[in-house]
Length: 602
Image (cartoon, rainbow, N blue to C red):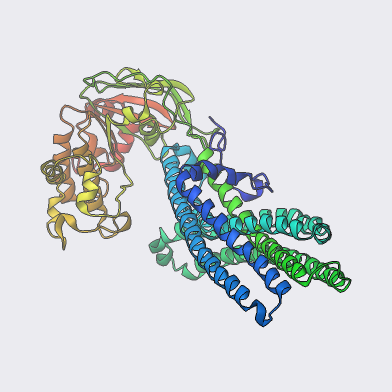
């Protein structure tokens, strides 16, 4: 598990990604399409009817030309044009039905695809997001699915219509004149060859354009998420220049792809219609020699024009297919990614009621992206039911890594972690995390209302329970002053709230979750002195009858813990009560002396 890219299935560097030049990634979409067989059948029926109506036109033209325009044939011509009007009506209705059903399928398939990709992302391990930037993921989830939508919404409809028209036109050409058809088919290799050669180039360029666009999108998302920092350091112009460079790189890649597609389209249209012109010349010689009627030649020319037009349209659609194949490949990489943290095939059930115990036994751990830098080394300790244990130490000592292993965001590389007496690797991660509530240092607040953010801890909680949790975390002290009270929208990442207000929301969320094991990561770090006192009282009530692990840099907040574990460089260097550790004059005592003044005031 120490190889950073292994198991994720996604290569984040476009230059290192294996090249692909076929449309095979699009086959991944077939099961999604076949799920709607009824509408697919209706689309195909409509397509055949529309194509049949179009192919009937040259037959009428031939009869009209061969029978002439004399007064004696006026009734005959009236009948034919009446039938033609009926055919046109059928063509209009069938084309509308084809457009509706194909577009509906496209919209539905893209919605299903987005659901599948997002569901997969929710199941992936933390190590995946260490490697893949969120902006890159969002580009795939939005821009690439939009490209698939374009394929189904318009390109697939055009491709199917022109494919049926091509097959039907070629068949009618053979029936009309085998000789002229043979001459026309001689040009077919000249049409297919550019499709194969330049199609592969367009395919590669399409993937490159999408990758560079995703890079610029990732940069934009990262910068906008830290816009206040950018402005504070006066780096707006510098960052804007970097984004401009990224967008120009994306534009250059798209421009090269567009030139290749334009050349491919020009080559196909010239060869296709040039072949029609040459066949028309030969047919004219046949008419002059009385070996063919003018109506037959006219019928053949129309079918040849239909076939050439279909080929020209298909050449344009081929470029769209290449774009969609690139998008499908990028989405397939996400769908094929496997989480490193999985539920075992036969998970062990945690005991009920929960003892709420935690035990580390000789744990070794290194993050996948830093396999040679061990975050924890030979760490062993246990936390009894109802005990409050503080974990302290300098930055980088491994405190947060302990929480990550308890929640099984990662697996140990040696030793084991047990919750309620069961190795966490033998438990379904969902069942494990249902026993744990966490208040992180970097508070996560979702866009939505104050009430929505608290209810996230337990979506099925009653309104009374939600309000009780809010009061316990002292959320009511600021929520009541907001414009819409608890229904006030807090903005993206809670931008309208202060750091202390956001942290109180996180505490209320943990209180509402009401789980037997509580993890507090600097839970009061963003609070002012008055708020800290109020919230500390709420936390004191919260930890009653719960097993609690507290990460703290401010040692004054953990002086009353049952035990304090001191970490340094990933190792447990001391353990005991505050008083006992102060007597040892070790790392904890040195840290405490730096922080405590005036008899313990921090």
